[in-house]
Image (cartoon, rainbow, N blue to C red):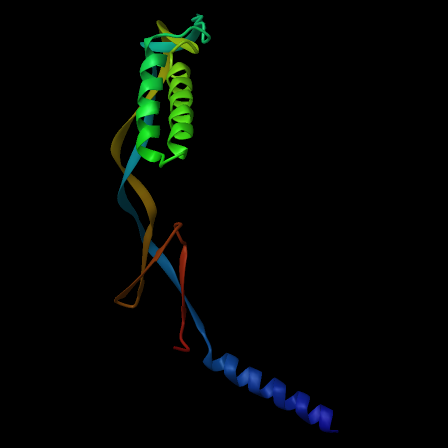
Length: 170
C-alpha cells in the first residue's frame, strides 16, 4: 500500500511540475553571420646560395720539441730567477734548479705545432622562410532572431538555427 501511495505521489508531482515547466519554441526569422578580424600567417620559403667558411684539417706542422731554442733558454732563466726569490738558505739551490727546469719545460711546450686548422670558402644553398600577415574576416557564429508577438528575441550560436527554445521556468 505504501509503495502504491509513493508511486502515485511521484506521478502527481512530476505532472504538476511539467505543467509549469514549459519550453516555448520560437521560429527564427533572421540569421545574421558574426565576423571577427584575425591575422593569418602565411610562410614563404626560398633558397639562396650563401658563401661560408668551412674548417678543415690542413695537416700537422712538425716541430722538434727536443731542440733547445731561445724560448727554452729564456724560460729557464726566468725559472731560476723565480726559484732564487722563493728559496731560503740551503733550499735556495734546489729552488733554482727546480725553477730552471720547470721554466724551460713550460717554454718548450708552449711552441706551436699542434694540429693546424685551415678555412676555405664554400658556396652552400640555404633554406630561408619569411612570413606575411594578412588580415581576414573569420566567421565565428550567427545571431538568430525571432518574434514572440511584437517582441524580438535573439540568441548567438555557432551555427544557424531554425528555432529558438525558451525555458519559462526562469
